[in-house]
Length: 547
Image 1 (cartoon, rainbow, N blue to C red):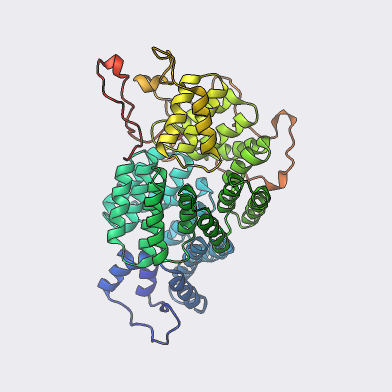
Image 2 (cartoon, rainbow, N blue to C red):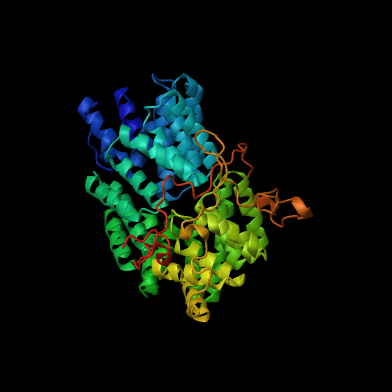
């Protein structure tokens, strides 16, 4: 998006300063070929120095010049990119003010798609996915060939749990911008969310080879590192993160990713240093939570408590800049704080339409921790439906099933979690191993419910529910808590409960649409039928196993 805007800005005569501190004169306005390069390759992901120079040049430009809406759109987009790159949420407020100035100069309905797309990206960065969807769909409705709207749509649909709509938006993006780095990385994201890890890795690898600059390549390498981590390959993941950090030393996602991989490899001192560096670079609650859990696993409760308190402080600070950290905060509360508070927070997220696999997992686990285990299992079934395969979600489901006395499904899901990623959490892996040991092997002949769910033996898929984010049409799938059963999808003030931290609640979204659940992933690969039923002896394919 930045590259597209910069190309347009240059075309209209806006001078963009170079990077670094040299005294070279600005280059002349590029011709069509050079503008294409800006939009297609190296300009697609700008470094911190390039963004700083671009912002400085735009801030010095007097207001009211020709094409006044475009400079504000460029400036707002640059602020947004800088905030994401450096983890500085104060830039998000500056971005919004600049973008609204652009929309005042030229409203979206009169053709200011650039500012509208940037507003969608800003809403995604703040985790307000419903608003992001509205901004991006408005652009698509007027200009279906405006390719910059589709990455924002993919992010919004994914955050809402509307994976089928995300896949459809990806298909359009691939038609409009085939084989570009931006398209390849979004494709990798969508395939991963649908459990197609080999395809996700292939696209990310191609993105690395097509990258035109260090910053862009570092982001593609980070994607490869995350995919390797999720497959339980910490050594390979660490190598990708190392290479990314050599290209961009301050890339905080790679710092945190390398910290997690180093902890899995037993290099705990290195892991703690990387976590500290990531937090200093970008003080995000997620990094503080990971560090706290590592300290706790090492038997260092004082350091763990200090980082858990930091999770609260950083989440409160993010809220001041309009950024929702409710998912991370709820995960902390469920495992280390007050589970009832986690349920209330996640119930509000669910009401806002945030029904991704991650929210389903966290809500189901929080319900279990709050003593509502049967209810929690419904959400874990959504989170572990065919599609995205998360070792953490499988562990959560297995523990809930074990608590309910469903030993067969519990054994299967706990073993699958450890097989998928034997290092998924420094705190939870030992617990999963103990649980598997306690459950032991199945009794002779096998229990009747060895597979755990009907769709594992060719039955119906689990409920996915809701309505599509793309066209609002109702589906035949129901919310898992329908039929009059008690749900977490209600006003948290019901039953007369009063939250102790009401000032920290996520703001209500004005859009009450209900997108589909995480199982709505297009055409996920179904599980094999039971080999005994099929008359064969082949092993069933494990969903999401890229190896």
